[in-house]
Image 1: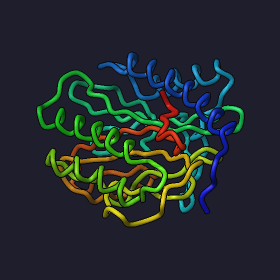
Image 2: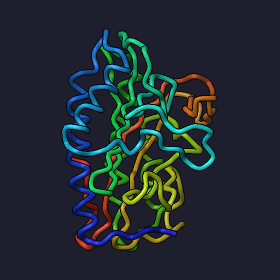
Image 3: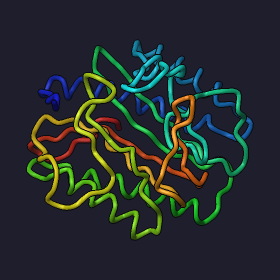
Length: 252
């Protein structure tokens, strides 16, 4: 069942999203060669606490998962697509770091992610990141009342094909707001005119995930997902409300 949000609830999610945006801004500046993932997680925890908010991910256990998530944020490196656990790994040149943050503030949840190049990168990696970011913009534009989820997936997939990268299968966006993961599932591929119709009050965490290689993912014992061929992956995400005046990004 899709849990629709009223204007007051959407405004509350936007407040959560502003805190999230601040966390991402600080983490972008801090993520440098020589910094460990656990240091970034601790920084995120400090910022979240200072804003009287909570991590929506800490101890969260999605349906089917064996363990609650042990970090305040997800930090996924290189071939790890999502749900990477912060540890003592020290960032080095040419790492590709995905930062995924969920914030719970006064009972309402926002979700957003970005991908960072640590140091230098190849032209292929730059193409991957550019395409994934463009796909998020393309998908957001289609999140309008009366459109269908297939329209959103098709818009995202079109960007991937144009840029010669591959859509990660088996993962996608989702509803968000009252819980970290809600219906509907929003795949990053699809057929125009197919799927659930978008209505006012939907709040969607839209998150294109592309790779330079395989579209297939493998789940590791710790709950993280990697590309099956260990190819590099990128991930961008925003939380968006479907409104009468068009899509409203709540994580800026």
